[in-house]
Length: 624
Image (cartoon, rainbow, N blue to C red; front, side):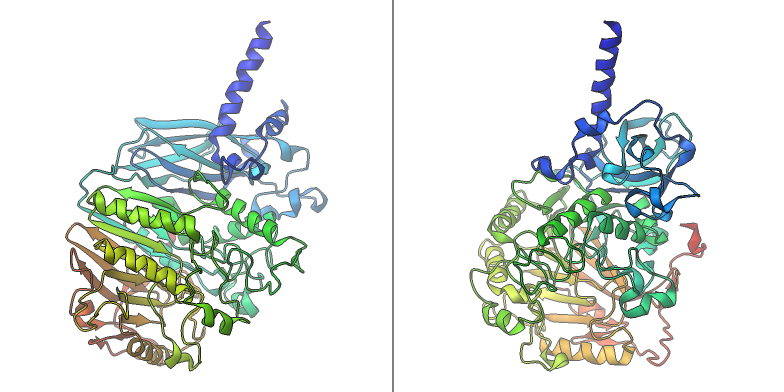
């Protein structure tokens, strides 16, 4: 009888350790079909088949994300690694570099992992800890929620293989302030569009070297689904070829692509040092996705993708599952499919609303072959970027934020919100970007109407996707009497950032002079657009205080190798209650691009010798 009781106790303890790894329920508790049967997984826990610590490695660093005032999500991956692998016995065909290579019998064995969290790096007082299992079912990933933490506090965390001294890299994270706390200032680094074969992710590493922010916001296109040939061979010249070298469609494809991206040392450093709040755009699944398909699928009723044998819906679910497995993101309680939109209260300073304007319930978009059609219906009242359920939630979030007296509202949007008339640059008859909010004008008007009619000010929209930098007053054109010179009658500001490495939309090898000429045309063609830059890859930082928000844009001089260099491109201020960019915009002087009613510093456009280049750290770049 005693042995039976002991066995039952072990099973209960083991099950608890399984369920603490959130990835077994990925991506939602409310969709059991998307998760893993823990009953079946636990039955494979056969004594004597477990891996030893010497067979395991922490293959892709650590990460944290989705901070609350009392908890944060922690992530790592611990997988079996073998030097001599028989290709006939590798798991799912993965290469040993990816962390696989165990024989098929051993691959079913679970891996036991422990974690601990403390305010000091020597863990003298551990505030949160636990034991969890992982396995090949979830790609050996570990995702846990560290609970019972103190608000707005820096923490250190580390994983180890159970019963051993084999540890992960030391991670650093930070909880959010309590919803009612006064928090003097919070810094954010904002990113989008990191395309592995087009360059090194230097932009991720620089805030680590400067230690300049509290949190990282990623607005999507964390990976790209394209063939791994470096997009027509470009990646070969810098030895940046993502695996697998084909268009990805299967669950294992998406996992391996994510694993490749996590080999970039600056991306690893950012995840290791800052908690992330990410959301997907389209390329986490496929180019120009929407509710019913994507750009390469002209027939949205097609049963299978020609080069993968995977149904359209299954491909999306493969991508979503891999994304939730690999990203330090909470399992949002979904009331319907594929929800990633969510919000965060950062003290009484600001509320952060992260939208999904791409995958959730988006009406048909510009698929390249149907541009004229989308142009014709772009102002149709029935079109939505986000679907009625998310749209109503979005407006309620804005209202609730204003009612609770939060100083600012920050909105994460995958695509550019403001109008972008590109006819001057492209010379086409359909001048707007119909894959962005311009293709959903009624939805944008409803959003602006809600803000204006309810007197909700101090709005900051953060946007990605475009591979360029755009800074605009947020205004309801043709409805409010907006003055471009003064900014009067706007309702906030939009800061849209360039790509980490994805190429300029006007050409990968565009010169600085050509890029600035295009920027001048764009600034003159768009009344609310105050600054625009096409040339530089990079990121921007937002520093949010009660009296003002400052935005600092940074450009990478080169991304063909790993380096710590960056250029301060432009700096902007938004005063509380002003609902517009402070005049003169950017102090009247920027490093690159085009500034309305301001000047651009003279640069050597031939060899791009910039006097504004500065080094964010004298330390060797390899030190982070």
